[in-house]
Length: 328
Ligand SMILES: [Ca+2]
Image (tube, rainbow, N blue to C red; front, side, top):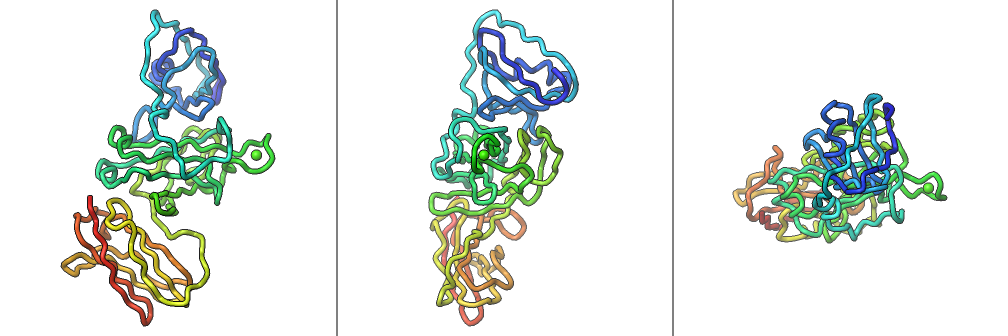
């Protein structure tokens, strides 16, 4: 194999765990990344360790292997066929809300790993999905199963690049910014990675959170900034603070407010003692309908205790308090 990406066909007749096959490359420090045609990968991911979403190498199938230097890999035929458990990716429930424009295999897939701590996983609800977006185009998605996170603390997501052989844009465009959206069963929340974590497998060395063909990005949940949805609706006629939903909630509460004119807004979460817990919106907002999100954390990033909280909203002449129940 030469330095960079190589295409190799697995020659042995019996399937074998992909990590076991490339272990000599890992031991030598030469392995950058392995990808199969579905975008699943074997690589050493910062903050996780060796990840294998390929599962087994199968006889006669092709794999992309990126190495940092010219080297060779000897594949010995296993003495006896050994059945390895399913590829990890097959255990993740399929995303149903976000759908991809491509059929079949993604082109030059990028691997994105979402990290969650056990505390963050405890606040996660079934039915949530995460979508990877290039502008308004979904290019990758995964269901955020709490059971999956409890076992592994990371979720692999495959995003596909625009296939240059097809008319129309059907995947990400390299170099464009990577956006994420969360679907909570009720609506979509736009989330922005606050900073780039890593990229070590792609053709470029861009350290921003941008799309890289066959690249890698690590996104810790704590670095996601929940922002209001980009889409604006018609300008409302009255000031209004909508009820937070879901209520009760155990991960993120969405709260919407309407402004008939540009206005200075304060939207703050208070606890039962009347103490401010978290500022959700503060400052000038344009006329329109806005969404704010509370991820049950205080202003210092700590998860708040379960219980009753209040959204206090002040905008020009209008004020309203709404009650919300947080259940861990
Ligand atoms: Ca295309």
